[in-house]
Length: 211
Image (cartoon, rainbow, N blue to C red):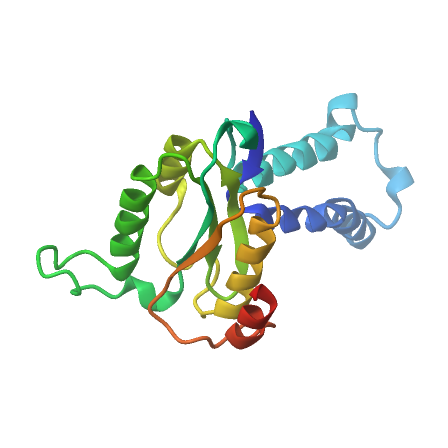
């Protein structure tokens, strides 16, 4: 079994933990400058801050959407290493591009194409990178394609990685994902509608590094 997070950047909220103690001290100094005049607090009251912080940590961990999946050893298959790079920027919310389903957004169409593509893989090792204003690895390379397909159901709509389009950074994350694979054939598949307008790396730089 493998373990990963769907929204790893949510863990950055843990950086706010020190504020729980610091802010409480500031409030006590503001309202009770002579705290020694107050009656002693109970054991439960003294540990209230600890309980609050523990609940906060659990909520942040839940927000990061942890999940586990099974993957077979790479030696068991002889396929290619494929990484899907999915655009979730703001423009992907636009609708009306599917003549049969006018209510479908470009994001919905891309997810449907990705799921159909994954279902047709047999011996391939597939990973997933999601990007908008920034990019992150939603799933490392895995042969558990059923679990990978089901993960799309856990993902929210557009904007989960920001509303801009960092194609260069997404390609770099895709290359980083491919490095963990052992297949001789490695492929990046970019699903996007936009023009690169964010991130640290340009698409040209990423393509140069990929060659």
